[in-house]
Amino acid sequence: MYRASRFPIFLSFLIGPMLVIVLAVVAYPFFYNIVLSFSNANLYTIRDWRIVGIRQYVAVFSEPILWELLIKTLVWTVVNVFFHVTIGVALAVALHQKFIRGKPWWRMILILPWALPQYITALTWRGMFNYDYGAINVILREYLRLPPVQWLGSPLEAFVAVIITNIWMGFPFMMVVALGGLQSIPNDLYEAAEIDGASAWQQFCNITLPLLRPVLAPAITLGTVWTFNNINVVWLVSNMGEPAESTHILVSYVYKAAFSMYRLGWAAALSMVIFMILVLITQSYMRHVKASEPVY
Image 1 (cartoon, rainbow, N blue to C red):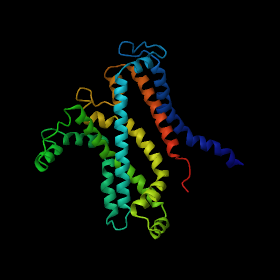
Image 2 (tube, rainbow, N blue to C red; image 1 turned 180 degrees about the vertical axis):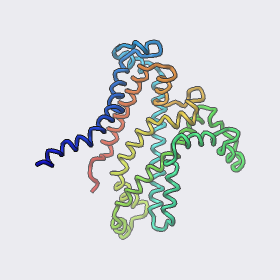
Image 3 (cartoon, rainbow, N blue to C red; image 1 turned 45 degrees about the horizontal axis):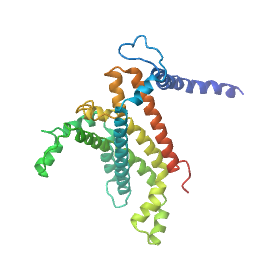
Image 4 (cartoon, helix red, strand yellow; image 1 turned 60 degrees about the vertical axis):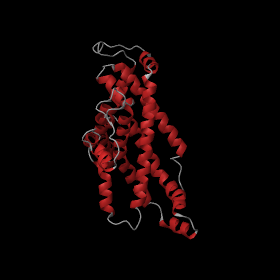
């Protein structure tokens, strides 16, 4: 009886600090951002801003740059997540084969792009894309006899450079998730498929991929959200959206609008639009792949 009466107190002691932290660093900024999105806060009204209704949302949808940034962000997200999953699953399947030697070493090497701090990797890739001295152009010029590319000087090439950097940094996460999923697939299924004469590709399509769905679906959802909201790579590799602000995606433009142009209310409204886009994308994806349904 005494222990039962002490249990709620002990539980409150464990949950209380966590609840305070979540309210302070997640809930309060989120609701404050909602309020700010209905205000006229900017550089001139930063001390006496007031609520102006949906005016900032109307301004967000009225600016043509929103649609340009949205298309660019969708391309950025789809291309990155596609290559993250494709490269990650391919490497996981390769590392899962019995004839591969030194698997722990391969896993350690392949996870390095993800384990290193993002800003170090991004700045390293920025140096590699340098027109005169970067490793990429040296390889193109000296070994492949191809003309060097203005990676960071032209809008399209700069956007491609940013995507290449993010693909490099993102595939290890999908590889680790897929490796974990492969460990749970019974070998009996592959043995039965071999007896039935199924080829390796048929086994991959009919056994491996369907049974990886429960682990890949949430990983792809997380990867989509992370990639959609990834400001670091865009900001560091393209040097804050250069050339001529052409490499911005939605989140990097929100940062620029808030902290360079001081359009605080407008940036808050755009960030809420981004939040709703992500909710719609993730909900429709989870319903499409039927992530909550059992495989067996």
